[in-house]
Amino acid sequence: MPWTRDVVVVGAGPNGLTAAVELARRGLSVELFEALGSIGGGARTEELTLPGYRHDPCSAVHPLAIGSPAFDTMPLARHGLHWLHPEVPMAHPFPDGSAAVLSRSLGETAASLGPRDAGAYRRLIGPYVGRWETVAADFMKVPWDGLPRDPLTVARFGLSAVQPAAWLGRRFRDEKARALLSGLAAHAITPTTTNATGGIAMLFALAAHERGWPIPRGGSQSIVDALAGHLRELGGSIHTGVEVRRLDELPPAKAYVFDTSPTALARIAGLGRAYAGFRYGPSAFKIDYAMDGPMPWTSRDARRAGTVHIGPTDGEISAALRAVSTHGRAPDAPFLITSQPTLIDSTRAPEGKHTFWAYGHAPSGWDGDLTEAIERQLERFAPGFRDLVLARATAGPPQLAARNANYVGGDIACGAYSGLQTLLRPRLARVPYATAHPAVFLCSSATWPGPGVHGMSGHNAAKAVWRALRRRGALDDAGRGRAPVAASGAAPGGTADDPAGGAG
Image 1: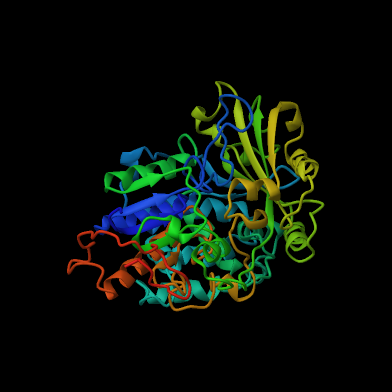
Image 2 (image 1 turned 90 degrees about the vertical axis):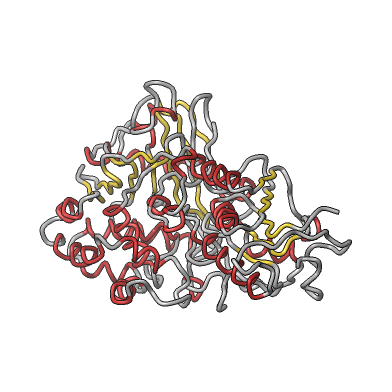
């Protein structure tokens, strides 16, 4: 029989890889298994349209990755990760050709909102500029896991962050500022009246001023490839093309960490209805374009922005979110999040050509086609863009779910932002990464702090695993893995009735 590993990780998305790296850095032996033929999860880069056009099927722009407290401590540049910054992180254009601009400069952003709202924006975001490290570290850890680094700052930030974005929008008098705020909050794919959507908007805005909204050279795959390179450097191993259906199909280990949906974890680990109350949210409808030229935005600011939000009013954005979240129907005028990576990364398309990335929102599991509605929105702000399209690749909820098992019903957030689940992911627990099985842990974006390529769910889960192993005496006095012992004939994970099994 094989020797016992310290930890087995299932799922090679950003969180699974981060958890594996964090545990390997602590001296534990780590083995990772991925069902697909390549690593990546929601951070992949593929030729989806034409040869030579490299697209990101899911995540593309990474303000929370470059600002991640977990990634900040890793030598990812040594493993090929190189950030590229557009001239403007994000532009939110309007029908008259003007735009609200989310700039690296707080002052430029405030000025783009108009004289009546510039001061209100400064008062909302300004107090936290220069404090990203403490805000991010405190906001992205489990709130009750130790004291905050900067209690006064996190308390002040939290008082605004727990509010719905719609409430924060009342601070502004004109449409530009309200639309900008709603567009930032809409990344959560929930109505802006949902609690804590204000915090999402504020965090994205602060990230732009502090770290930018960059893309990785070569595509999002560069992030996970760098994580994988670091993991192998630390002695960890990665196996692809291995679909895990039962816990006892895995090698014997002291702990098992799952970068999967909660329902998949429950099925594999034999935990029954442990996550029966967990709710999945609306989906996305994604289109990747191969283009003969750059997007012909009427807004000059949009032409120099890495990311462009399309939703001319707070009311239109809110209506689109309510349609998919509350009424279960596709929006007539979807709010769009778009990215134009080839403005700054020529490696992503043949010379003189471009890629363009766009998605709107759709109900969970919806099998319709949102292409016409999305392109109608794009034409409003970039007339004639269809004439530049060489090829397109579309993916609605069924295709997204088929591509990534964590996207249940096409939910790219791996869990709805609604009710208590907004803050208590995946459920109310002192250690949200632990399960009823003492050797099994969850590290996907279904856990706090939620979706995004930042690795913090994996980082936080790794801390929980290490603490649990230390309490069980499975580590040496220095907190590192003990010398491996030969495995017995017992199954590695046992069952829900016999949770210890052979898992150490």
